[in-house]
Length: 321
Image (cartoon, rainbow, N blue to C red; front, side, top):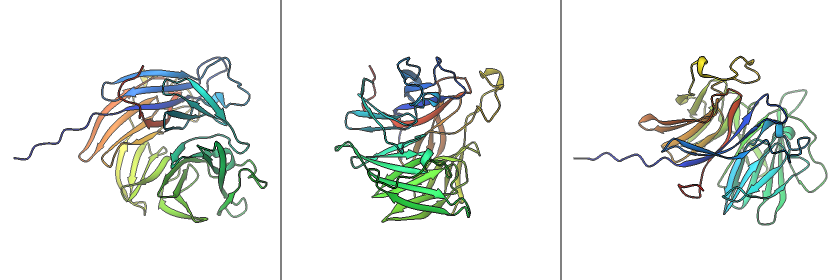
């Protein structure tokens, strides 16, 4: 008689949050370790440090993308990348003139890929050499709306001007191919061999778009679902973002364009059957895709201003200090 295969233990994840409409002197978000199996969470960083240079570090939008490499944790602020040890000691930081409004980041083969939303660009940073080595600009032509692609040397002349025509917010790398998604893109764009091509159709207003299981997965933020679709856009699965009764929420009277619940952002793919998705107010939801099951939900805050941004599996063991 066949036996059921038990679900694997859910992982610990590291997530960042941003707090919309926060003021100087209050918390603008932070970084949390979240044990999805036990339902526990612990705040490891709080983005209200009085030593922060508020004029230049995008502190008003908190901490953003996350990536881990070796024994280091990379966390993006708006225009600066901070490097931490696994016990969250700040080791160093770095910037680039074309890094602005950074959203998600990704590491592959000793290279850090950074979204630079304020410049319609992806920057590539060589981790061992500690220098920027490549740039990719995806910008809509102001007259025609056509999507134009231009690689550039981040150490040379001809850097892109400031501009946010596509609102690039995610980068994913696999097999030497760079995949780019954004709020203003209705395609997942593949960069390879000096060319930009459409890999898959997407609705507009997505976050965390990337290839998945022969198709594409993304937070369809406008649709309040995690969407798994074929490359031609046909939906396979739509996973609803959690919602809370209005009476449980804090600051629910803010206009929706300032902050709202069920704003889906943050996505960690565990394997081909398991994902964890983020949303507001600061909630992580673990799913099994086959059979479709919501496995766990962990809430960090009921303040609708507090939204998940970056989300990765914690690679340093199941315990934290």
